[in-house]
Length: 349
Image 1 (tube, rainbow, N blue to C red):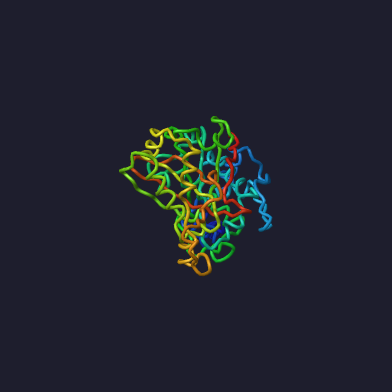
Image 2: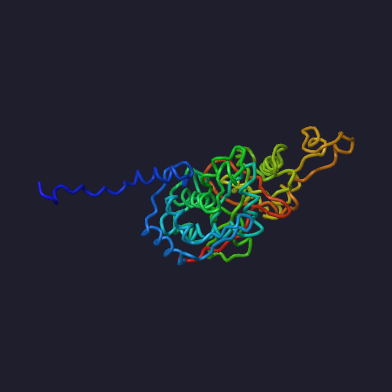
């Protein structure tokens, strides 16, 4: 045996499975397997969004955190994003840093709110982001990985982890991922981003923090009123934390309910006004359930507590497939922090 022959062989590079196990041990995952972030994959994400590694996408003063593009790219790769998804992820991260969103309030709440990522504009078709059947999941790759990337950024960059800064009592499946597109073709009015001041040919992301998703069913209604009464009931259910805080609300109308609204000729403002008027509970009801302290007085039976501050606090989106369903999401806001953002432009790749 020669001297050369006696030398030990170099260790084999770790397999992808071995790398994934390292990330599990370090706590860098959401409990599901991740894609190992190579330098090439990270750079491809940065290039797709035309970002430099040190570009600051968001600052969270309460956490003393600056979220830079390189860290976002790492988590986008971990989540399974393709490079083309990075502009959407970057826009969503910018939304986290908006002061009115209230990141610390949302991230640390014991109710464990999820963050819905709502995508509008031409990028929906370009990336194939689902707005139709099963829009809220399970979903194709863009929806699933974009929403997941945002949560991984919260965990790995802003340290929003269960048992730490994330104080969610129960959490929820929407905290893995909750990303969908608006079905602009089924919308009887202008799309969400246009209604809020953007151009139709702009691509945007809007964030909405919610404590729950309640699907409502009505296959008999031929006019909007019965459907909207159910929406109002869902947004004002007595156990919701959103009710007492007069938080914003979100309703997603799927195809059949959207068609009822379209045929009726009702405007967005009329729908908002109807839901606002009916999303309420009497003070007597709230006292019976100890949501409000004190003895029940005769006038409490006819004194109302509205679930929202004003009709405009209801966000209306159209998504989903065939079926007599809609979905209601009570918000997670307050007078200081809305738990939602205006549409955030997605920079073109």
